[in-house]
Length: 334
Length: 50
Image (spheres, one colour):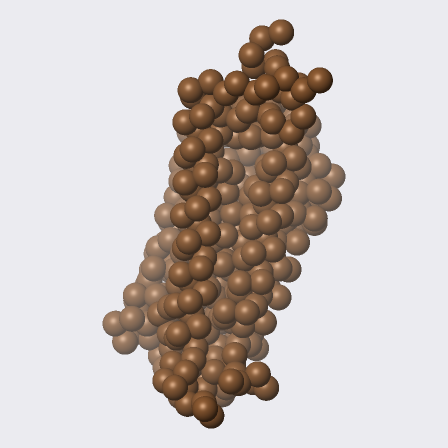
């Protein structure tokens, strides 16, 4: 028996070659960066001022929660990931981290992120974070992804919630329209973003039997849908300016950026078959820039004082901290 | 009978890296809870009956 085989056979002593970077990869850091950025922008936009330490804690919880959802997704989708070229080098399909270990890692981080958010920041953002993780794992990953062509449309709600969580971390509630407009913006942005990627790699999804739109309905239908989604997306993108929730800098960014998005989608729609992949990847790359540009414009405008004033909510957690009253203290003061 | 596990040098190196990363993560979590507690209590930490 070889040394490696002996180490595997020995009870509970499976030798692993996974390093910390493999666990970081399990958290899908690129997806996490977009999640954190949109949440941060919403925290800047939200009325009131959260203490920087609490703001950093909220962002950390959102980042870890998003990473946990990514790890649980990679646990459940290891069979699909092993087939697809784009994902076969991920830690689980490549054998660096066991599926069971990915499950335990993801579940532990999910619990930690939600409880830390609840006890250190607030119950409302914690409930939203828990709902986001649960939706991504149970509704999108386990249920919709392998079932319907609308998988990423409905599942996109999970990726759209971080600005609402960020807003709730500052204000303690989610009754304002702006965080929900940002939710709708990301929700409508997700289909053209993912379908452009799916169009460029549809063979991958077909082999893995994932019912993505290009696989089920074909490239032409996918191109149609991408163009169709960019139009309401553009309308929602300019809505914060139209409703006087954002200033002229954002309004101009949204108008120009959305027009460019529609134009690139149109270029993809008209592209001959041999140029389809290139045009689709251009739409995909631009979609990421577009979302970053919109949220950067919103946040920058607020930071430099060009955005319209937003009414400050009563009983914001930040106000409680600012006055020195501690929510830790309720009933259990020493 | 259980066989003794002989880890290769590479496996030992990776295990050490994992242990260090976990220790740092735990230390960071403790520091985070401490810092947030100080922020939330603020000056009220001195305001208590003796």
